[in-house]
Image (cartoon, rainbow, N blue to C red; front, side, top):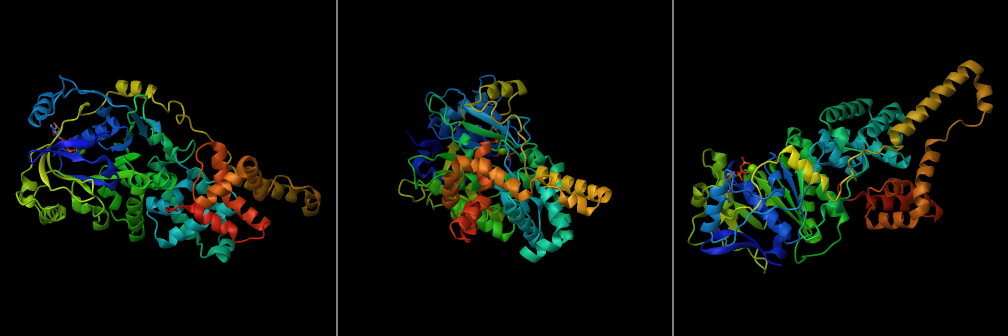
Length: 527
Ligand SMILES: Nc1ncnc2c1ncn2[C@@H]1O[C@H](COP(=O)(O)OP(=O)(O)OP(=O)(O)O)[C@@H](O)[C@H]1O
Ligand SMILES: [Mg+2]
């Protein structure tokens, strides 16, 4: 295992120490200064060292990472010249193992999650809800949990919200204020989400996060490329999705401290979107997740045009820094330069603030964490050229790469199963049928008949029972450790039913509080 070569600076090789790569990082610089190329070079080096990578391809110009570069490529001369300039011996083009993902399922495997996995906090952010509306959304979640209703897709959430509005008075008395107006606003926001194509993102089969942690048969880490060009048109969905992914990784991965090399490196392009008008409570959560996730062996690298877009508390945790050129046109630019200069370790031979404005394309100020955890002296560094292709893939090339994906066929077809919408629709249909019968045959006659369909409670029981019979112990153990088994339909049923199960088991053992306790643990950081 070797450390990652970044480029040549101050006459020395500048490296990213693998065992410190989970201490996060930042790649910053004005447009066209070389951020994406730097990211590409670092990502492929991680892959070569057996570290899987996740990266969002915001402009479609990163997909080429799956193909070798070529002597006929327009940047060939520049790349070869750079390799020679920094003494990169034996520079040769080569490809990387890559898997493509796409929330819309067009340019890669679809990525899905369920409404309950996303949780009310992130959904509220996604819909831009205020505190009152978020409170109502929480109540809808609690109600669904209590009733054992599975919240899988947007339709499920719509149904539960409609039910919440209809029973506003009763739910208010039990949980706190639920107004029809608040529910109405949430429903309208949901429709808007739907019009942005978010409906495809919610449902099953849900992503198994372990599928981001794969290596190929040569031991190279897979580079998971998220097609984000279309997604960027819905910046909130983009930011919330990446945040959800981080929190899933955080919740799923075991604690490993500072491993020899990261388990996954996560590049967060257009990182400023994560923090654009984000409520304080969520900013704190982000800060917390970023801080804690490194001991799970995940390194997060923020890529941004302006480093001051990243809140100080987060920026302070980014130990490995590559700062490309910044412009000095506006007062804000100048502030960014001062801030960048202040955070770099001093090099007596280098005026950082001046250098930042003078850097060439593909040149950057580099400071990384040394073995002992201290930052290396800042050096003006010529960044190495990537071995893979710069730029996009043709649809044909993409299709060929997808056809050999290790996850081929696993996510491509959506699966529907009985969840909140179906259960509530059935309940409404039954109620209507009974009302009709009462009208035609009279109340007394109808009351003599046995109940027509199972109640919501009975259904929830059935849903839980199937799964629980197989693994009640696992569900409860999972609930207590906060770890969930995911995505396999049975396991998901089990975890969705865990709230109900925990309540029942709590009752059975005479600990009525256990249900709440187990649910809270199950709830994780972001819910
Ligand atoms: N290390 C490098 N070696 C040689 N050429 C480079 C290097 N880095 C960047 N370049 C050249 O500069 C061009 C622009 O770089 P890149 O696309 O990485 O900029 P960027 O900062 O990501 O811009 P944007 O903010 O617009 O996305 C590349 O297409 C390439 O030709
Ligand atoms: Mg770029």
